[in-house]
Image (tube, rainbow, N blue to C red; front, side, top):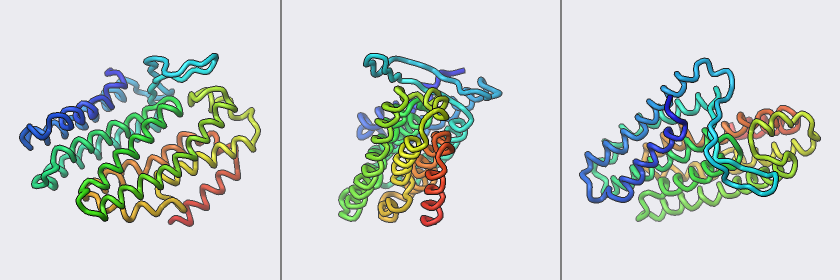
Length: 287
């Protein structure tokens, strides 16, 4: 079974190659590199899931300590459970198909190599987001997909409408990310850790008011990424980007990141009836 870090590192390699050398390479080579990267990630996901069958418990890989301060520790850790498995298959499977389609759609565009570099970069951050074993690593992927979406929405930067749309998406998402940041600070104060397993196991013994505050702040972050009321205003303008970008970011992956966050932190929401009701109200009003 391949290590979990191999899944996101393959699109990162595609980004580095096309980002650094893409202008000097033929378009066929650029397209081939860009397409092989997510396809190889998809194959790695299949091998990982096959090696972990049946996936009854989360499989965690710990690589190194990122932050150490007294008893507080945050590691660069990846994990896979059933929720992660679903997201990995969608991201790498659908993402690979969109890369293949993009090769023809963007064939005559002068920014061909730059486009595929951004697309691979987005795949890298999205995979980091869903593989994260703690809130901080998830936040790195969360911010990364925000950056990549800004680059892709404003890809045709010679159009004012495209640059305005990219700026709007970036700014509105920062509002949601501020809520996510506050949620992480509150989690550290309440639980003393950011690891998913430890936080969720200890949630039942915490005050409902604190859990409600954490859940609602996480919901603010989810509303930004998933374009829910009131932070939906960036999404219509985001169609300024190339059509395959809309297919990848605004239909299949990034807009589902908010759904993934709420599902991942579902233990916190379950312990707060107020938060669950607000999730339902926001979803209904957005629909």
